[in-house]
Image 1 (tube, rainbow, N blue to C red):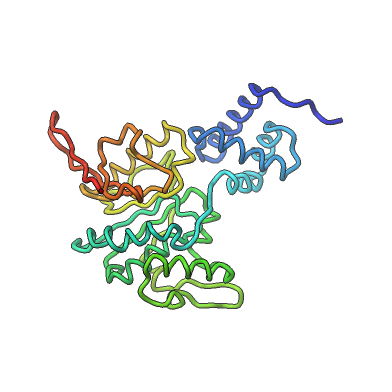
Image 2 (image 1 turned 90 degrees about the vertical axis):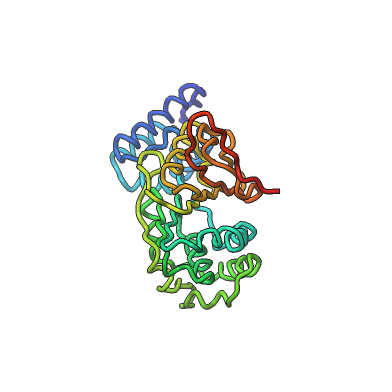
Amino acid sequence: MPKPPQSTENEAIELRLLLDAIFLRYGYDFRDYAKASLKRRVHKRLQAAGLPHVSELTHQLLNDKSVFEQLLLDLTVNVTEMFRDPSFFRTLRERVLPQLAHREHIKIWHAGCATGEEVYSMAILLAEAGLLDRCRIFATDLNEVVLHQARQGIYPAKLLRAYTENYQRMGGTRSFSDYYTARYDSAIIDAGLKEHIVFSAHNLATDGVFSEVDLIVCRNVVIYFDQRLQDRVFGLFADSLTPGGLLCLGSKESIRFSRQAGRFGDFDRAERIYVLQPETPAGEQLHATRTP
């Protein structure tokens, strides 16, 4: 006999208990993620597992780590591709990298790197600009499963046509095939690109800063956070960047309504690229670098 439907209030309580259980048992903190998005993803897992209520999922994941790991894949957003949004990468190539070119050492942080496609896209841009040898890219994600995939740098060959088109649209200067080796039905990213990338686990909700970073790329991640967590993450980014360092967000994300907004100015408003303002004495007004 099917169980009666839950009240909205009871379901909200069960969702909160699920998030508390994940944090206490596994150390992953989703409690300040946007609730509507979390609810959709939890319901997707319930449907796939044939479970009627969130409480039953909570019981299972407390006693079976594999259940948690499957839910983690649902809760973390891993939709990405190489040179995703070519206009953004064109702006990186034409405006951002020239800003970094005068630095002896360049430190870049890709936060929420997922399976690594955009990280390798950045490495290709740096290589074509002659900057890769003096760069260190730190690519982080909270999900160890996708980090493992990112470290391998192996992608389905069926995606190469779209990746090649993106590369050409953003103004790539070589043949995209120079950057991978085709092997059966897969493409393996060139080892020379991997040498400059460090993949590591990092949770934006709980972990600390990366110091003296010149450029942070965190695209299509904070859109899934509530306002409180967004404020924390933007503060983390501001504390990690060098003065004049740049922060890149996704096309539907903005720092404008964050409590940290005053610490940044616009570098390229259309592409959601922001510049960290220098510290000024109390009473002085910061002037953002505006784009037309």
